[in-house]
Image (tube, rainbow, N blue to C red; front, side, top):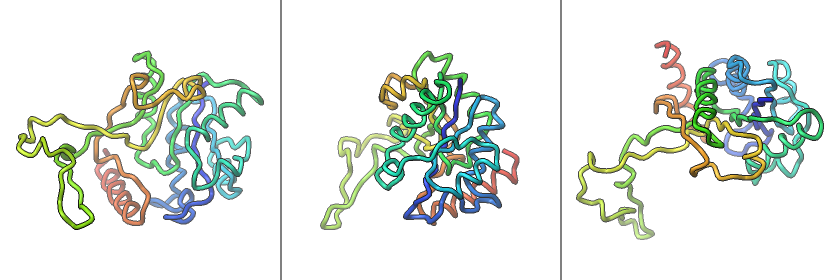
Length: 231
C-alpha cells in the first residue's frame, strides 16, 4: 500500500491557523491534498491532525483522517519523523501496513501531481530508501558571511575569498515539500540526507518556505505568476 501523510496540526505561532489560511483563493492545505489525490499514486491520503476544523476540511476534500494525532506530537517541539512514524504504526496495527509513504507538507502549494509521480518513479529506479524534493541555491554558499557581535563581517569560509564563482561547487538544499520513502526506512529512522536518499530536483521558482508573513506574500506572488504563465 502507498500512503501519503500530510502533517497538519492546529497550533501555529508565527502564522495563526496557517494550514487553513486562504492561499490563492483556497485553504493552503487544499493544494497538497489535491496534488496527492490527483497524482494517482496513493491508496490513502491521510491528514495527521489534532484539530477538528482541519480534520473536517480534509475529509470534505477527499482525504482520510482515521485518528486524532496525540497531544504529545502536536506541540511546538513535535518532530515530523515522529508524526509520520505514529501514522505508519497506526496503519500497521489497525488497517494495513504501508509499503511506501510520502510525507507531504500542508504548506506546499507548489507541489504538483507530476512531481509526486515522477519522484516515486525515481525512488523505485534508484533502489534507495528515500527521494525528496530539492533545488539549487541561487548563489554560491561558499561566499556566505555573518555578522560578529561587534557588527563586523566575517566569511564562513575565508579560504574561498579569492576563488572565482564559476569555480565554486554548486550547492543544493531541501525544498521542504515532500519526502517519498519506504515505510520501513521511516520506521527504522534511517537518515534522509545520506546515501539512503536521492534528490528530486525542481526549479527554484517553485520553492518558497512559508514561515512568516513575508514568506506568505512572496509565495502567493510566485504562485500567481506561475499560474498566469501556465508553468
